[in-house]
Length: 85
Image (cartoon, rainbow, N blue to C red):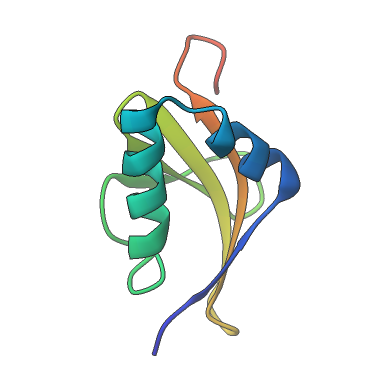
């Protein structure tokens, strides 16, 4: 059974601003999360209530998982810098 993906408005805006290659990579990664949000380079972030991050090149996708409803809530997409997290 697939997971339902919801992309917040700030995350959607960040995705639209990406360059062509990065946009395609992030978009494909989000599409793959429908089948398996636990795949790829993921890590649960400490200190934040149930927030995970997935590494996609130099970008990070921050999201929350609701396992009981099979729901992925994408909070942010940010370029990795020393201030990202």
